[in-house]
Image (cartoon, rainbow, N blue to C red; front, top):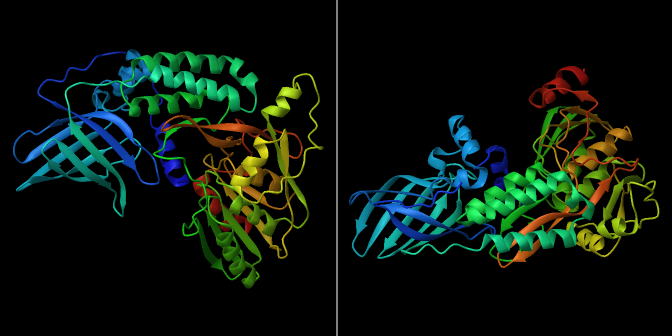
Amino acid sequence: MLQYIRLFLLVISIFHTSFAISQLQVPNEVKWKSSIFFENQLGPFELTLYFNFENSNNFTAYSSKNADKRIFGGIKALFARIINKSPKKGIFIKISDGRIIHKGKYDSLTGILNLPMIGKPTFEGVRIADTIKGIIKDSTAIIGSILATKYNQIDCFNYIELFDKIVDTTKKYIYNPDLLNSMQWKRFDNKLSKISQKVIDDIEFFLGFNIHSQKLPFSHYNLFIFSQKPDFNVNENEKFIEIKEINEQTVYLNINSFSGSKFEMDSAFNKILAKNYKYLIVDLRNNPGGGLNSAIPFGNYLCKERTIAGYFITNKWFSANNPRKESLDFSELPVAEATTTERFIEELKNSKGMKLVIEPGIQTFNGTIYILTSNKTASTCEPIVYALMKNKIATIIGEKTAGAMLSATPVQVSDKYYIILPIADYYTFDMKRLDQTGVEPNIVIESDKALDFVINNLLK
């Protein structure tokens, strides 16, 4: 689940633009009411696809034109098209190179599906009368499906009402309600109120929301569409860790995400500790975060003393205190007992906040530790990086981390629409916030040069 969420969020870095209303009348095209589903519960994204069966052997299809104008405004959309930051004609989804093979009662369809969130996977489907069913495949696996039915009338969902519900949900759960009085929130509220009046499908509202939310003064605030309540339990079969021996004294540990299991982290360190290496290089450069299930065991293997990982503060604390007038003191907060993300979220929901403490494990790594970071090193990684650096357990090499550190959870807004929003603020053990600031490494260097720098300079 989490890797697909991260995949969707990559689209935010693709578009930095702005989009006006042009009611679509597409001549010589047939409208098909379509639903796009993705693996691991993402979707359905409802939209109109315009199919053009050019002749008996070829077809093309695309979503509504000028979506960029509806999301960003006309002038910004035009500029974005000029610099290739927005798709041609403002079409976000397109099937090109479509081929038709007639097989009696049905037609077999194949083509290339252009998606801003995914890339260019292949589309394989069948057409039976006025229904098209197909799958979306990348180079290795099926990643989604499409169901389309021919129709004439465009029924537009009420996105105005949806956004009103999103605002109400945010006010109820966000960790600090004062954030909704900020100028950035007011701009966002105004922008999305206008967008909700213009957009005509789920893809447009989804993109508009998640692009503009990046300008808010807090992270971890995104809209998602799920076919059912999302399940964030750890899949024991998913692998996020790679181990490679550089030489007899040095081992390289690449952790792509802390979304893995305790078992996977234990297995990795059992192999590392068995070899008694002198140097450990931990690569977090492409790690966007994750949960406690593997992050806490990681800390157990590196911390030789009891270490405060930080404080998580909920809206119950902000309701009872005024941080602008009072000195911050979280020392009386209870220590979290949870060792899984799911239980930790429940502890936060029912308290003013929690203190997260890392206890040393039965076995710990006794050599020198180097940790590699980049501007993609985010969320769960950042308290770990900060604590290991400040307690002189590890040397941090690379770029400043992302500055996206809050505790967030999905909340259902309406039917299939969910908001992932931050329910707890985070402070380090020495009372610093990392959200919107990040962690500055001991040695600042371009992230793609960090590993070579450690090997060629520090190990010598």
